[in-house]
Image (cartoon, rainbow, N blue to C red; front, top):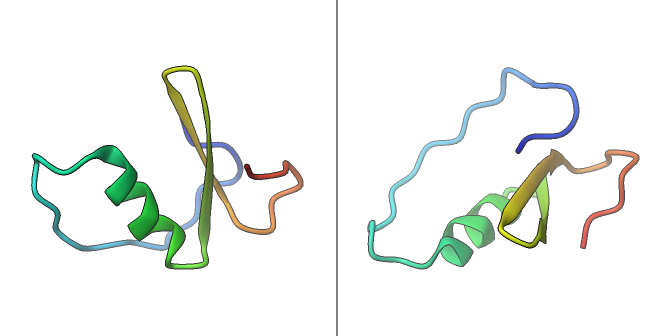
Length: 55
C-alpha cells in the first residue's frame, strides 16, 4: 500500500523473481526517496520526509 502524495518520480531496475521481497525493499530504501514499514502481511510504502514515521 502506498501512503502519501503520488509523485511523478520513476524507479527502474531488475531483480530475480526468486529473491526475497526484502531485497526489493532495500533497493527502494537506497534511493533515499522512499521508506517503508511492514505490519503483518502488508508493506506500507511512503515518501521520505512524510509526516508518518518509518520503521
